[in-house]
Image 1 (tube, rainbow, N blue to C red):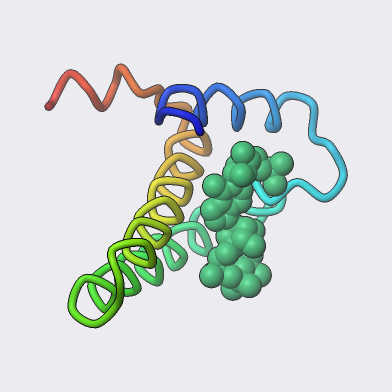
Image 2 (image 1 turned 45 degrees about the vertical axis):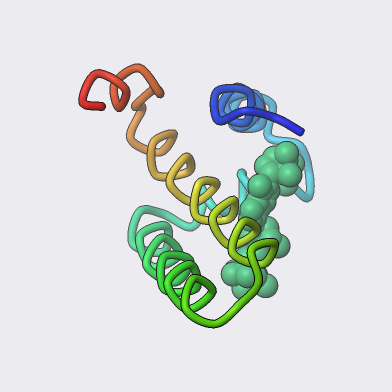
Length: 87
Ligand SMILES: N=c1c2ncn([C@@H]3O[C@H](COP(=O)(O)OP(=O)(O)OP(=O)(O)O)[C@@H](O)[C@H]3O)c2ncn1[C@@H]1O[C@H](COP(=O)(O)O)[C@@H](O)[C@H]1O
């Protein structure tokens, strides 16, 4: 179990050390266009899960959307604090 901030710190570390097989590294290397498509894809899956799937499946889709949003943040050099100031 981890929080949004803990996941972000983990992804920052992946971006820094670039371990083989990392989904984060692959997503960052794919570029912002591919990253944006993944955000839209996961957002659509969240929507469909909210209408048609279980709470657990919805939670999993939301976790994947959060990951994809964090990749966009990392790619642009944003931190969670840059986002939190608008909440
Ligand atoms: N939370 C996630 C996470 N959510 C989603 N994904 C990626 O998203 C994929 C699932 O998305 P899709 O349903 O679109 O499946 P897919 O189309 O087969 O995926 P792709 O081939 O497009 O990558 C997974 O296979 C991962 O590549 C994630 N990858 C990593 N994390 C976490 O990020 C941290 C760092 O991970 P690594 O960078 O892989 O070490 C770890 O804590 C992981 O648990």
